[in-house]
Image 1 (cartoon, rainbow, N blue to C red):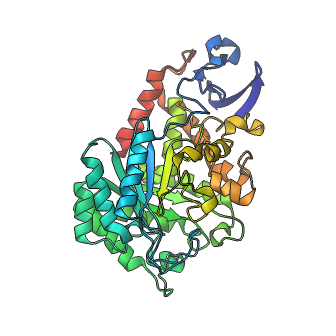
Image 2 (cartoon, rainbow, N blue to C red):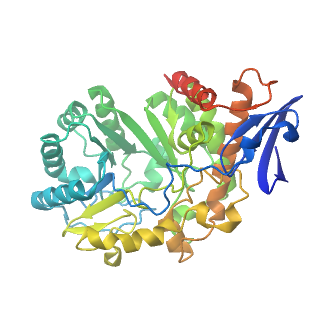
Image 3 (cartoon, rainbow, N blue to C red):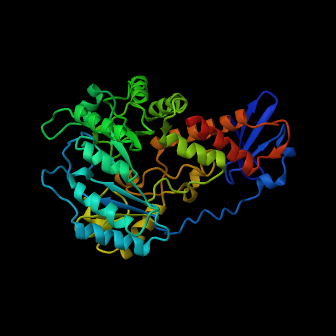
Length: 423
């Protein structure tokens, strides 16, 4: 793959013999042609994408921190360690939901998180029952450690169509090294039992795996393990936090990125959706832009114990990032929005410019003290996704010899084929 500067724009070129694809990273258009001079001038036009409003604040997601407590003491966790139970009350949960529905333009999802959300299962049951009394369309999801999940809980979540993501860091010997209880004991047996109960109940269930020093060298084993467990989705999470954090001691982010890309095809062929890769790949192929990686940049409200509101779950225990009213959130949102590559000049020539989203804002603020900066250790994966996406387009389109700008229908057809191959 090569990059050229033509007509005051950066154009990426991929070749297969006599066949050539050109990609305009500014407007997301893809063209087939033996020569760039033959491409229709429409390919070079700046696009007016009505789906992109960098300044918009349109809340659509509510994060409910139903419990700030946890029964685990994971080595890479950013949250405070406490044995006290710090749960949202029913009144606080109801108030948060009411506030969300008052300010949300189109409510789409509610996410239960913590701490460990199942430490407040009564609060979760109330929230679902209350919302379902007036909204049948919103989706529910949660991330749990799995250890507290019983058959009763699994059946309830399944019957209410709650998507559940279980944190598992691979086979027992790797998981137990990083994910311990308060006594320093491994937690794999309890966690995997909870996962299996969810699967048996028919719940849509995924796995999230933090990649760190405890498992980065055994990617092939992680993939085999995941295939055996048959999750609907798998997320390989790269570490958050500053350089002193345990999980930041990866030997190489670039190597981790390459291993994730290698895992993509294997997992996709097994019907497992690899979250970090496929979300951005589908956007690239379809021509959709992702100006922000995270919904904290104007689409999310986080509600916590004590009637506190924020936009990012990362600093949940940092009181200066949470307020007593959602009316005070736009100041934080404005700071977070600076993370978009659309605001960072040095990102404009990158092949992944339109789908990067700027990576995790909390990480940038923690490590660099500012959001409007390129996070080099996160760039590699998104570039690899963009390059792989262009290869998929090259191998998928028909009549490649015909000089043209690819239509939306052609691009959507490629996405349809990818999605069908997952099922």
